[in-house]
Length: 223
Ligand code: DX5
Ligand code: ZN
Image (cartoon, rainbow, N blue to C red; front, side, top):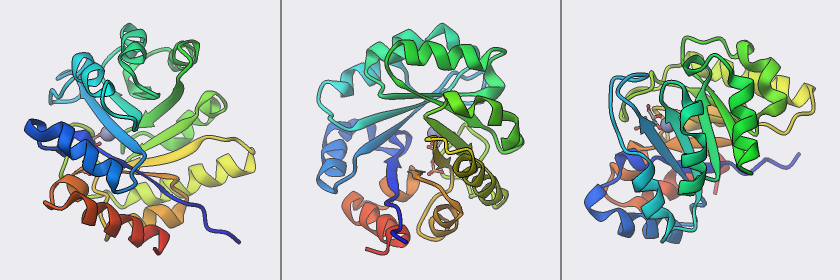
């Protein structure tokens, strides 16, 4: 059996914002293809990060696949703007809206990939009825809001359950995992069936971005 290649999605939240252009170039040179963009509103989560103008600005110089993670209440208010800012995939939280199916449709109407995310306390089974409409399922392995937290072990079982369900139903949904991913925790998430690994501090917190991306890739892909 050929092992699938895992996609790394470094989280911009942990970058050095004074040197963002330089650091994005470094990711590109390291062969990274995705960039995870954590948008926080200070209401859905107890933190505020960045938003539309920042995404729009880095879009001009970065060819990376923009994997936008909206941690905002009522995301339906801003889908069009995040699409126009340059997101390639827009993921929102099932806990943040009363009409998740309609939000998925809104994202697709903008010709973008659509993702749904579950917090650690939300059973992954609760989004199964929506997966047919989802290009990506983002399983949170920390409470959303901050980088640099520890991986919550129970996420591994959620990844396994969802990946098996997706396979059984012959769906195309990618499984992504977000929070506390490093060389120590990534192998379990990958072997449970994750397709995408989001990593902030493990990529940007070590000084050498290229070496950190390489180490993480090696931990899961074995090369
Ligand atoms: C947390 C964010 C994550 C975070 C991950 O709310 O969704 O994407 O940046 O950071 P690390 O990899 O440091 O846990
Ligand atoms: Zn995130």
